[in-house]
Length: 289
Length: 278
Image (cartoon, each protein chain N blue to C red):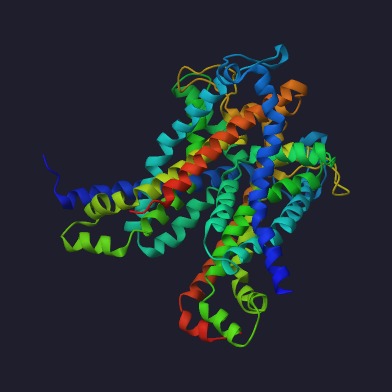
């Protein structure tokens, strides 16, 4: 029996929509599940107290500070390096064998799983360079991991700057670097920022890298050479070792909220930028040079 | 001045490749000696992992990784590709601007949270209705399927959108319905791009660690069914790294070498496939 095309169309549409709905349903379920379990145990004190009794009591302030410091180190290194890479790839070179090799490296690095970054960071930073389990080791390892994210997003942002920006600057006698710095980068800034924010997000999500390179001290870190745990690592330890389900839920809720804020703001910035780009006639004739 | 800046930028651009090389170098340097000592054959195909007795066979973990990865693909690929087709071809634009970032958000949720939910919610369900220990290949596959979904969806959507407009117009002009156009015209044209997305998803599934540790049970045995407990390559590294020393630690790095090799292979294939055009 042949199914009439109109019926097939309806069935196909329904099935595809169902698949999409199930994907979104999973997202809502995960967020709802964690929030439902976590919000009851959240309080101001939870965010501002030290970790007591290995996490059975108290709050997660040291983990929050640890997360912040490690993210700062990671983005502080990967940010400038990534943006510089992106500028080179987008403005300073033509596609060829060399760029292909560079791009291959970036794409492969993006695919390397975090546990490998953990092993690498452990052997290089913790053991060989003697930084020990520390915020510095953790941040350095994370910076290697988030580098591809920042490069890709920044390159896309730089490439989306309309051509006239460069032409006008060049016609005014600007050197290539002056063109990039004064005319291209300011316009690409929101996109670059998106890349950096996504990099921050990836660093916060990660657990494997920091467990291997930053250790899991519960105390408040005093310097970059102190061991510390991130929120994800703290959550993992609470949940895995069955220390306290309540505190685990609460930590997860804080984590999810942070991630939501980060991703939504990254998307918001990108979305606004792209909307601006879609009417190039006005912006391109605008403040070039 | 300008020349110096250009050189600096070039150096920065090489940093990713340099880091990749450094990772390979350090992991191989730590891992390969023990592989030589044990013998490549008995390391890769040895069935017994007993580090305290000096027996390092990782076959159970290789098989575990393969089971879990293909399990997650079996669940994640149909849903992911269907979602991509819906988003790229059928859904109204105003839905897409909300739906696509929501699905990409799935990648932003920490893997430990997925693992936790698997332990709290999914594993008991499987234990009660299907039997077995609950913490199993099936549970890990379900969790990983969700985690690889965003990769598959966003790469596939890009691939579908990269198909030239004229393909769609041609199909419609011949009187095809939208689904006929999507199935007979767009799908063949976008297939290689979608395949690249699936391979990248596969890489993510093999490399995922924390969620898998929490939910796969971690028994060092060769699994017999989807309901058995299993340990993957990544889990093996992460579980024992905390206390391993000497040969044992080197054997964990050697496990990392095998994992790295798999990942590089998948990445290279994915990049090759993605470059193919219509």
